[in-house]
Image 1 (tube, rainbow, N blue to C red):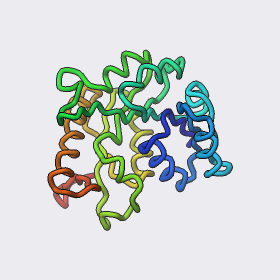
Image 2 (image 1 turned 45 degrees about the vertical axis):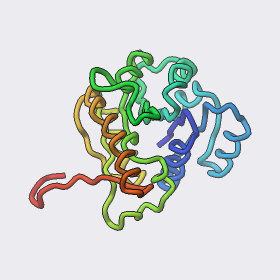
Image 3 (image 1 turned 180 degrees about the horizontal axis):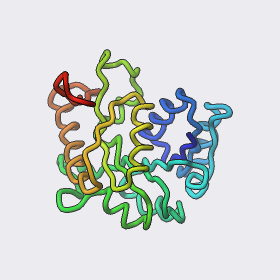
Image 4 (image 1 turned 120 degrees about the vertical axis):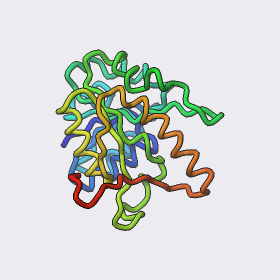
Length: 214
């Protein structure tokens, strides 16, 4: 799959490292350092590319937004026309006091869907620590950490599900886009659990009865 990556920070680069191992092509974009983009692309040989956020959208069968909340409007504007495009977003609004800036009555995902008119938005990967992406995929043994995702378009959700699996996690569909109002506070709970348990790399798993369908 061709993936346009907008924001090559820890989350973006960590996901790209995992996806390229599955043969996906990555186009890096949205960095103030062109040298950084070129360097990341060069690491992947024929599977690595770099360009502008607009290039990322045109290149990708899916576009993945991995920037900070404060940069989101700038990134969306730079991506151009997103109508009908699958946009997977990993954005959180963590604050220093242990709260989130947006949540409960709306969500980052819903706000992004307003910014990016017509985009098929799917939030994912924002309920796991960014540091976990740099760990071996078997860090929890045979158990895979759950990645919650949601959205209103079945095709976009199917793409997100595949990319979650290819990144080495268990995809857990929690419904319509408004369910992001629950995922985003849960991400803050993950942070608090890691702090209180003094374990940097943690994850949660989805437990089901043995006779339950996955």
